[in-house]
Length: 298
Image (spheres, rainbow, N blue to C red):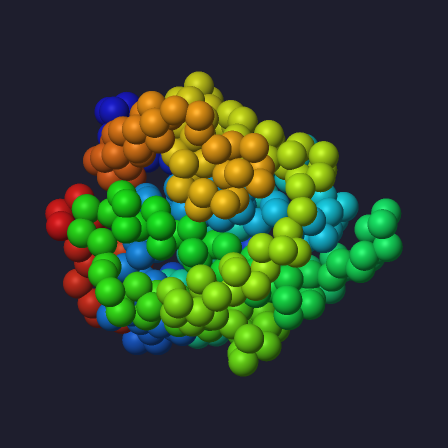
């Protein structure tokens, strides 16, 4: 096995360990799906920097305590994190690059799963994965974090209003999951306003800190994956906005930490780009007859 093959195998052993039913990228031929090859979301999600943003988004998302509590109560991610990561990646990739019927089916599957995630916290606060507010929080933290990773680590990142195009694309996913379209942030300015509104409501409990400790740990089925996941978690932590780091007690005490994390981020994205083959994205481009240029060739 070549080094490139080993990198590709380790990467997909994490991201493709489990799939939602119906995920595929080849049919029907000609159907561009929700977005298509000219969209900002196809461009942003087509690079390994998106994985850094995904983990950072999970860390940021823990600050909404009802969402974290609901996830802990109705998910086995602490027992089988690789399987949970696989389902999450399956949904994001499938809705981004799948055809319209595929994306519709994946959204329907997740909506059905969300109906089971509801209850009351020990302090009396209700939680429900079907609430528009919670869907928006989860979607915005993911989209915001993906953009931060994209701008910092993509070899040729989008700029200016193209970044807003990405947020508008991601808003479509939130809508399909049941969020109120009128309340979803769709630009960088709207996201800033949204976080300013949400920050007084965010709390840090022992449950939150436990989730953060878990997300910042090492996981994977082989040594390379475990080392890689540990590096990714540190880089993802550095991507958090300063206010979130302070709330979680992760604010660096010296400039050395962020510099080391960013050097690691540059290194790991370069290594992954050299080895990872994006078969689903290649298949999606072939489905619509569009040329595909991997990030390594940019």
